[in-house]
Image 1: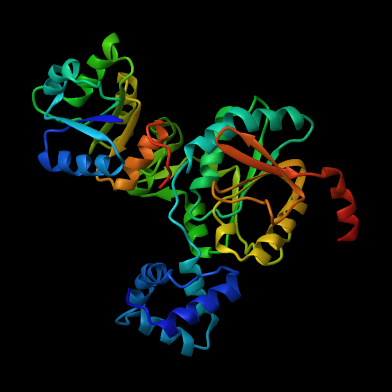
Image 2: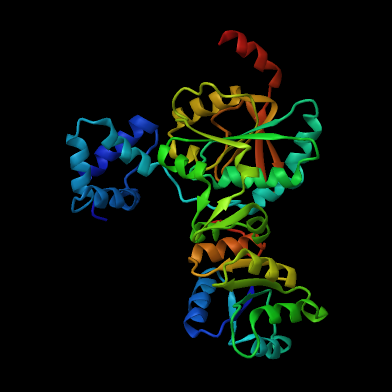
Length: 126
Length: 282
């Protein structure tokens, strides 16, 4: 399974990369929504899931999610928001924009695994 | 691992006697991890000192705190999502079709811990039951401490992150301080009470569905047999038992027949008609 990690924090990208690799994922990284949109069409194989931060320079995660969801080329991409934004209204906004799932920082590796299992991207329970 | 052999043996004997749970050598790490917070709370330097204190203490409370600490599990929402999905898609419609005359549905979460399984079932049933159907969920656990948390229905952000679908968070929880509280709609359909599965199972209704997952693995074969037999007698005719994915009734209680629903294996009594005669004997 191929995951695209989109976060402007290199520390957060490292944490997610390590967690995903331990789950057997292949990982590609992007530093913001714009960077991710530029790289997405060139990736082969295409990622199965994108883990998307909300607050990033150039293009934020919500805009990235909205953009990708209306683009038929990326219809099969599963979108998981991973963010410190924890208000109910924001979760509703992200889901309405097209995010499939939502994970609030800080998180444990088990929580990432739980969400990916919920999305049908892994099978083994923790 | 810091726990000594004598201390581990004492704890293993205690937990086996009080809760019929088998802690084999090799589980020292578990004892260490679960008792360390109790040692800190008691103001002693380590787990060994805490266990020695418990050995000398004449009070039941002290020893019971050890039993409690070793019988609780970390728990996720919708743990094993494929099992819940099969329950929603296959087993629940069948149950509704077969049970049209019997309402409300009686559901038992038999190792409820801090309540995530019971509330997950409540969310699923609230979403999926046909109009006019009701459910009552009973959550039981050996530990009074975890049940207090289950009843409160208040969870930290870290607990919420463990497998709760965002749609459910939005629909069934409200922010409370830095945590989240379960909606009263769900809490009203659930009762929690203390119960030791290895002891007498008294004052319980007949259940349409029993979730007893990842409990049997802790018991020896004799206790497994006894628990399964007594749970079977508590099930409504045609009621379903759901065990953990690594557990089975096979080779232990042959009165159960096994049915597969995708990722879900459920068990029902092979002879539901036998239930009324059992009543007469009791």
